[in-house]
Length: 279
Image 1: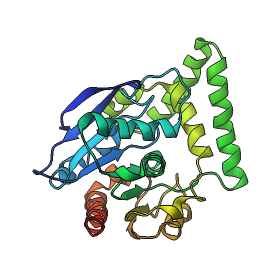
Image 2 (image 1 turned 60 degrees about the vertical axis):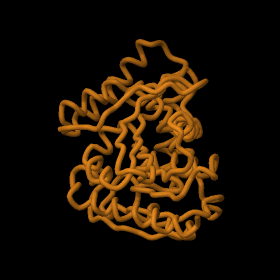
Image 3 (image 1 turned 45 degrees about the horizontal axis):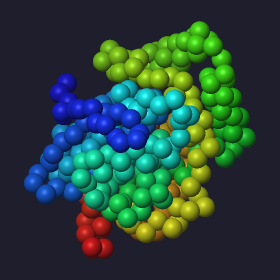
Image 4 (image 1 turned 135 degrees about the vertical axis):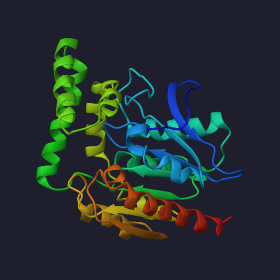
């Protein structure tokens, strides 16, 4: 498996992060590929780099606590991840771009628009939602993660080591390739727990209707992680939006990549074409 060039990037006042970068054709529009929870840029997007890079300039960072992302002593906040994206764009001299967010990355993409509206030409939201905890069962589940996040900041390192080992072993049992497991082993699992809690507390339903740029949503119709009706709600909340449906599970971006990646390319191209009409 080949991956595009990667490098460490220092963000002034924020710390050092890691990005994959594909230059794309001359003058290509810029997309930021924002990965999901417990993943990395490589894990989430390795099937898509080549196809998308034929049309777009790609920047794909590791988020805080994930892989080689920023190592901070502060609690994990999705808002900080959104600000990291804008900071990366500043360092690279990128003015405007299209955030493409997958699952947790979709929440970050939404927050990039909310916090840095002038930078965002459009949004592509994949296997994600405006909120993740509505039912009693969901709230209890994320409440458990919130409790773990607090516990992770108060308990001794020995306890944290045990807890992260349990989470890592759970992911190890998912049948991932050795290279994927190696990347996951590099996570700061204390931050992963905090990130899970942050996802559970995320809710953009009160302001998503204010989004004034073109959007596409990519919906995985066999998703057992983000409820399909939650994904479809984005269609109602967004104004200028089109929908792309994949008959696949939450991990279809790599398990069914021959179908998923062309659909993702169509979704991004749609946003790009519509955004040109606003210039």
